[in-house]
Amino acid sequence: MPRILVVDDETAIRSLLAMAFARAGYEVRTAGRAREALALCAVEAFDALLSDVLMPEMNGHELVHWVMAYHPAIRCVLMSAYDDTECRDCPLVSRCPFLPKPFNPKDAVSLVERVLREPPATN
Image (cartoon, rainbow, N blue to C red; front, side, top):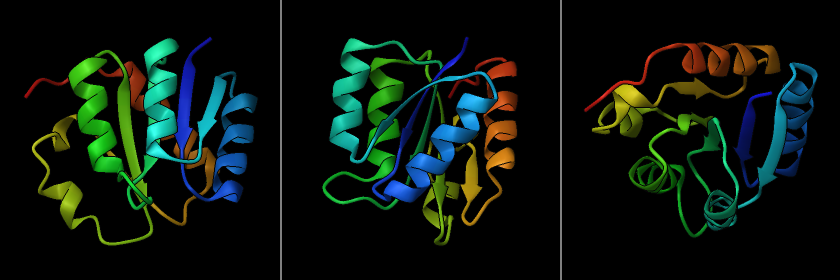
């Protein structure tokens, strides 16, 4: 069973995604802040991370950079309701797809499934 960590400061989005991924057969953990996600990654193994970009204290880009540096096997996807310019300009863009909000939860699951099937990209 694949394990996913969903990170978003909005409770409703975390809950919606947790239900969608659980229905798709994933073991799901959630975090409301990037630092909470860092703590979970330090003690648990995940196959994928789906994170919002704009969050207080530490944004999704900073989180993904840390995850890719210390847990390179975790596949990352960023999501946001705002312009993805920062994502497109990121040096890790080939390793981190972008999911625009609003989205259908099934699309989020499909994207993560695709990412998990693809061979890891290298930069």
